[in-house]
Amino acid sequence: MGVRAPVAPIEAETQASVELGRFKKARRAYGFDDVALVPGGITINPLEVDISVSFGPLRLAIPIFAAAMDGVVDVAFAIEMGRLGGLAVLNLDGLQTRYEDPTGVLLEVAEAPRETINALLQRVYQAPVREHLISERIAAVRRAGVPVGVSTVPAHAGRRARLVQEAGAGCLVVQGTVLTARHVSRSYEQLSFDALCASVDIPIIAGNCVEYQTALELMRTGIAGILVGVGPGAACTTRGVLGVGVPQVTATSDVAAARETHLRETGRRVQVITDGGMRVGGDVTKAFASGADAVMIGSILAGTKEAAGHGNHWGMATPDPNLPRGTRIKVGQRGSLREVILGPARVDDGTQNLAGALRSAMGVCGAPDLRAFQETELVIAPSIQSEGKLFQQAQHVGMGK
Image (cartoon, rainbow, N blue to C red; front, side, top):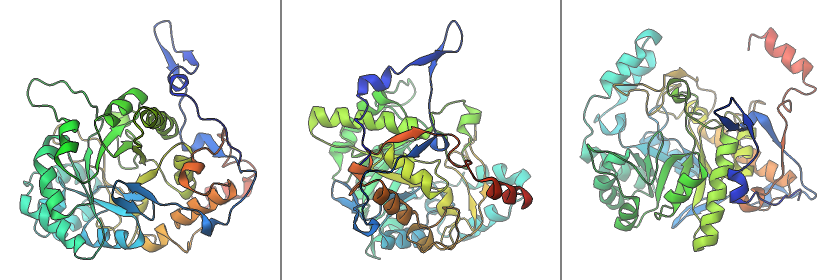
């Protein structure tokens, strides 16, 4: 199968570093463009591999979450995503819960000129969240017979947990730019993930995280899943504004190592979800081979006909009133959600049939399921996409791409 032994957690934290100066050393980190999968010694029919994943009682036939972003998920999108086998996550702090009918606001965001968009986003997000809309949006999706996830900032998680469970949410995602099990503040009370997990029966997913020890501490609180990624999203500017982040292959591998440590310690597996930075099917397959159990995708899904943003995409931190960390990007509408998730693909750039790409990669790597695929050998290969592609590159330059 082309399998190599996984790196032990201690080794993951003590890999060779390089000297940046007399005061500082740094570890080399890798993103999706830096690595490639090595085919296995056997191959498997892609139609016969298992790509399902479970979070407690929540089982997904397709291991893909639609990111909790207002340019992606509304009720109609969540229903279609659920019917396809994935899970959409609704942003409880977004436009869907601030306005009875957010249609006009979404059109205003889509049509606003670039020079005024951030000010507009800050203004429309000043409207208060209406608690009754949280229950109504969840119930609307559940009436269609499919599951839906919801996302909240940590400050409101304790108050909203029981509400979303009673409304029928399949999971609660507690999401911040960076989340830890230990937080210091003199002005407000820290969220206890131990207490939160004990207070409800639905799976709690926490994020975001990129580091082994932090991930391990979060897993020990009882969460069912953990989001990996700080700043890799197409609409996110956190890495530029704050200078914080770790490339997704390294981040996923480190958090997956924490999962394996926690599994050995407790016998309980916490699912790892790579969140952001994936542009094409090849990036998705590399996320799983790096150790992910599922992926969360935003910009690719924002470009579907069903997405709420009319071909536009913006991050959760974009409307921040003090320090915006994102912008609206125009992604266009390139296909239906079904084409992007299940195909058949009408384009050859890897942006459609993500589940098919995953199945095919698992097949050529000889992995019958996702856990086996996590053991696929990776090589450092920054030239893998350009090697031998002279005419493709020339054509793209000629077309102004």
